[in-house]
Image (cartoon, rainbow, N blue to C red; front, side, top):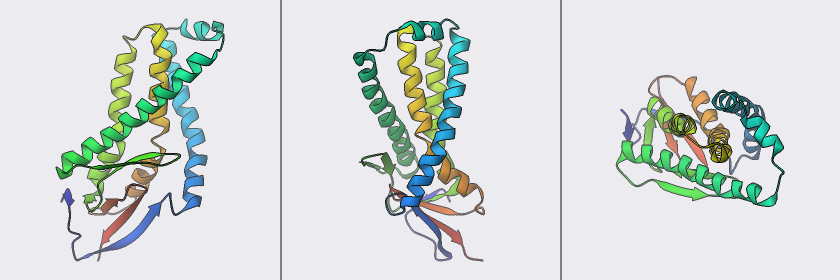
Length: 196
């Protein structure tokens, strides 16, 4: 079973997570996001140095002004939008129904309410933006002029660091038995196990 709109009778709710209802979960994700973001920044720094060792000298020589910093805002917005569109594309691929999208103050989300996904399929849906956008961005970075490379790397950083919620659910699902089903509710998840 890959995706179904009917929860089988022999399944019951195992656990739920919702960042809108559980403020401690939101805090936990923010705390975990710090080391994850530093790790992503470290990897991107190594890659940027490998692409162009003179890049760091160029960045340190640039005087910080308002316009380049303001230009990061649309780059971040586009990265978040692409991240959620990839989730939505994978939801559509497995359901053939238009996914839902939403934006809250601190996050955006894609969802397919009313659909139950096998945990292995949900892994793919959850990790798709991190994997596919990162790989595509790293390839494009190899051909990007130095003037634009910083913005592309910032978009890659935004995409990867913003995947902390996706990583959280995927890691928790790794400890669930085969056949576990997940319902994505946008701001949270319902996880169902087969009754023994």
